[in-house]
Image 1 (cartoon, one colour):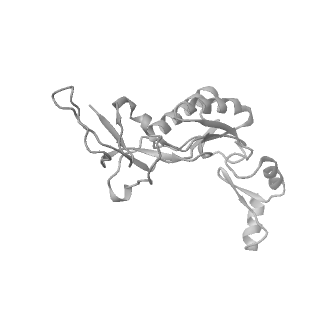
Image 2 (cartoon, rainbow, N blue to C red):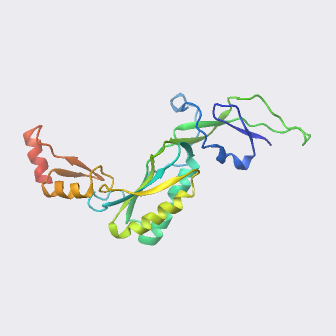
Length: 229
């Protein structure tokens, strides 16, 4: 059997077991036909796991798995990386010691033009080049420097999180980097600045993030937020 992965360019003849290796090519505009009804199911369904409801003060440490290439990541690879990282951290430090988030979503649909061979094994169909094909799978397009996975936890659990991201990195093609964030958890505030703003009661906890209490706006609302801070 000869199979082709069609991503909008002239197809390449591939073995069935090597179909996933053809995914990283990025050559055409994203094709997301879900509102029209013609789609394919994603392999990944869970994007947040662990202690999701932990407050912003519980997990100050954060590490990211960052892409170092412009490529496509299949939903199967994202699911495998999520399971790998979750299993290692859960076994090592417990299921409530971290919060993992998958930062990319597989919206782009790739197509395949399947062709079966005839009775003679020496003659295989070649078909039309650049054929449209049928929906085969979904991929997430990532840029250089884009975050793929993020894990927030306590400072004492940093080594476990780094090892989990290192193991999850092998589920993806291409190159990835593991970066320790200077921010407080999933927020966009540096750790020193967050402690200062918290002492001055200028930030309000909002789940895994924070809200700024600004001097402008409704006076009654600002006073109520300062009492909650």
